[in-house]
Image (cartoon, rainbow, N blue to C red; front, side, top):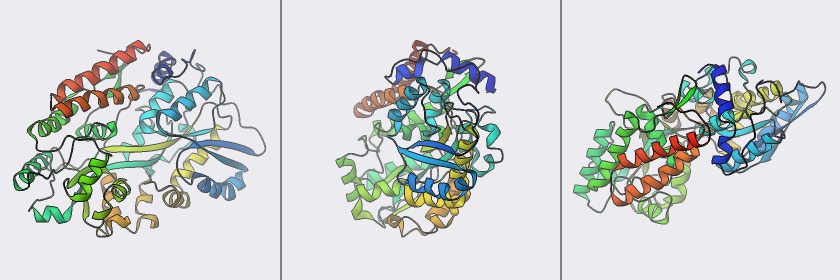
Length: 445
């Protein structure tokens, strides 16, 4: 998508996303000139403000302030924020008053929302040479398919397959390498132990389904000419929906939501023996299934065809420079340092517990030891780094929140009733398109 096209898309949608998020509609995009609102860097010391939810980010910023920042006379102050739509709403509200911070932490799926409201600056000219530090699929999420760069990847959530190694051995199961084998494994387990489930289909976290669709090759939001195109019900996503819907309907897997006391108990007692998740899963399992520490193992996500090697992404965020910043170059330099400098990345892992997006950091000293929960798998992070390199590109749009909300409602009902997942997917498509049109975006058929 050429940068000029993205500017036009921003102008069309300037009032839309704030309405969708429940805030006051923006009267207009800030400016037709991307440089307006940024201003020119002033001489003398520079003070930057960074809105972030990552734990310990202030300690990481101190490394900058005492090192590169002191040399360049650039000081960064971190202001702790909530994450998700709450932060997006706050950023848009601040931008409307031209009082936004210099830098913000933004989830990848939130970037189109912020860009369409002209809240993020194009920093391509300030981050030359940074692209090669990241997997292609991760980097593309910060460019939105254009020559512009709207953020620097910070952390990522490559998806993986987690399973109880001891129970797979007990039931004589092989770790599936394809989704067809995954389905056969679920059925085989049911025959051997009717009260045990391989896993569950959960509709209470939209990111899981989005990541699975991403792995299958889905492109939910793209542009056609000067219009947005929504393809949530495209062939790859239908394949994913039909696959999981079929397993739920035949009773091969459970249909209960994740993160509930019942789900925790199923994991902890061995009633559920596998989980399709992401690199951050060890932290969740530590809390959900404490009695099974050391009994789990991690493997790559099953593939749709033998010989393929691709994964989806569940979660992750970036560091972006706002159009309200009067020190764009200094802010971009900090964003690059934060997400590529070895010392900064080690501190992010230690203080914030994040899995860095920078590929070199994924095999750094911070990840030489496996998570304590996976002490039985010494190569955990080595395998994770190899998997992360295969992350497929994704395509986000300006109303992800609407699509995600519809998913939770439509798929939760379909899973509970063991009804047609394809119908739920069409509802998700229709609601997303209707919202875009209602808010003033032009949508291609």
